[in-house]
Figure 1: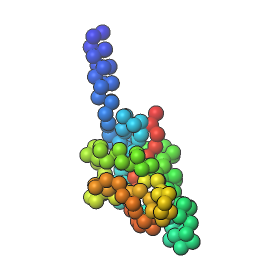
Figure 2: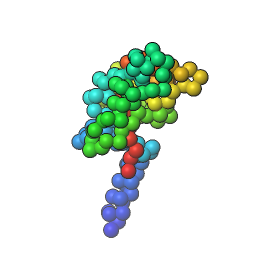
Figure 3: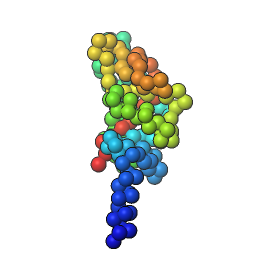
Figure 4: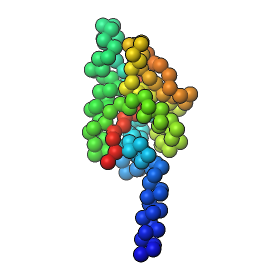
Length: 149
């Protein structure tokens, strides 16, 4: 009985931090209860936040078309289809754990879904130096996230 209790306590302790699931190529962050895409697409897929047509029309909040938001919305991966683009705070938090990721671009510029209110053509982007503003027409990397169980 002591071994069983000790084993349960040990498993609970180990699951507090983070873990990777190589079966599905995901990164599970138990501290935030988020599940992150961590397959090779996370270091190769680059999308715009808005399309060129929406930029030209100054529709800076319209993410329809071939965009980072829609990439995540349409992602069917790891037996899930409820992926989304992370908000600024989630992406910022992920950077503190980036050493746990298996698939990461070398310069690490990823989109967040958070737009700047004062500058409609900019959204928050994360890279090795922290969070920055990026023009929504840039082609940057996309890493999708979903809520954990």
